[in-house]
Amino acid sequence: MNIKGVKIFDPIRVKIRDILQEFSGEILKWTILFLDGVTNKGEGKTLLEFAKQVNTSKNGIAVTKEELFKISDRFFQIYEIVVIGNKDFCNSHRYNNENEMISKCSVVITLIDCACWEIYSKNSDIIQNIKDKFNNTEFI
Image (tube, rainbow, N blue to C red):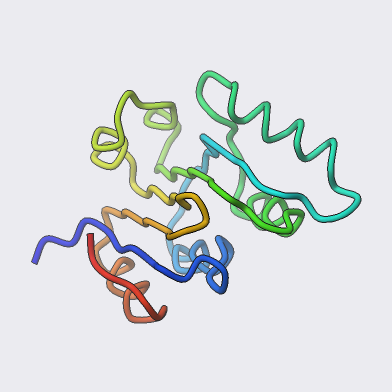
């Protein structure tokens, strides 16, 4: 079986932190390509400005995994996010289509309209671990 990715249909209980922890053995450079959501009370303007910066940047915003944890903790709810992980930054940029992004990047994590997570990885063991760890999943 050629596993490309896994879809999680439980985005309320499964947070990006939970997904990123499955990549703890991987040394990757992370980039946020898109971000939209509702911030926690008191986090408003600066975090929304950051989201705008992410969404209008030429190649997304490079972040560490720890920074991704902190950013996600400042949101009450993330509606949509696109995060890519690569061994180096040469593939960390925006793509014209999703298939190209999935084929070039080591990891692609997408939350789609608060409905589901889609996670793609070149490491099929991680995809299998995610499928086994979380409920309400399917391979894609």
